[in-house]
Length: 312
Image 1 (cartoon, rainbow, N blue to C red):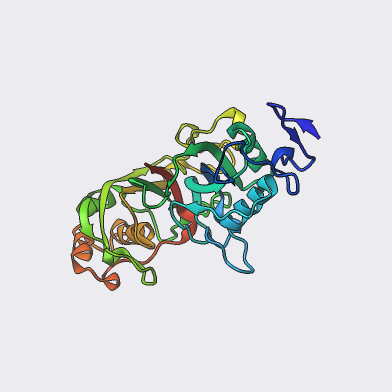
Image 2 (cartoon, rainbow, N blue to C red; image 1 turned 60 degrees about the vertical axis):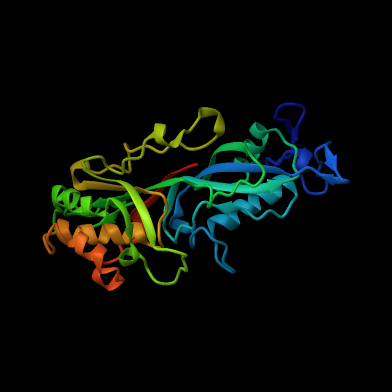
């Protein structure tokens, strides 16, 4: 056991004693005899390679289950978290936002360190903050930004196999893809870019920005993650073992007020059809107007996709 600050003692597994199972302590303020609930907002990063997606699934390991298990160890409570969006198996996050309520009274910095101490190396809490009562990670989100990484070099990069789509059919024309993407900007019905299976009130979304850049590797930067040295969170870099020849890499980023199921991956698959010369630059606009998923390109594989950030 060791002191982790502000009079809080930590058990050998990194769990603060104040909220350990069987020793749970609540806030001193009570209303109607009930302990005061806190709403906590977490910003987390995860490598989705080993997970069957974000959402809890029986008999499969998911990011949600992994985070909730850590929270139970820290707080002694069975907590259900809500994320800004559900990522599929193999999809990663640099800035996923999660909200939950708890009776645990630990200071934020202690809670932050304790959660990270109980998470595996491929999941990390980057920031923990108090949120107002009623905070909803989905409905309160104003913008989301996704990044998709493509490696189109002639030889696969074994260190990028979990973090980029290796396109094997030749070098893509990034400039043509950039020009073709202009038709997707603005407010449109994006049903052509939605995989069936998710029920939505509307398929109309507003795309604020699409950027397509060659020569930046995976494009992961410390400053984009807001990682602080005190958070015990890993620094993700675009240099080192995971960087191949950056000229063989294309990074596509899409920012919108919301996304349909597989919308980014279908946009990427459609733009790649242009980049390889199979379709003209005018084709994505035609796909958009068709309002039919069958008109679009293939769904790009999951491993190249990263949820970059969510704005509120």
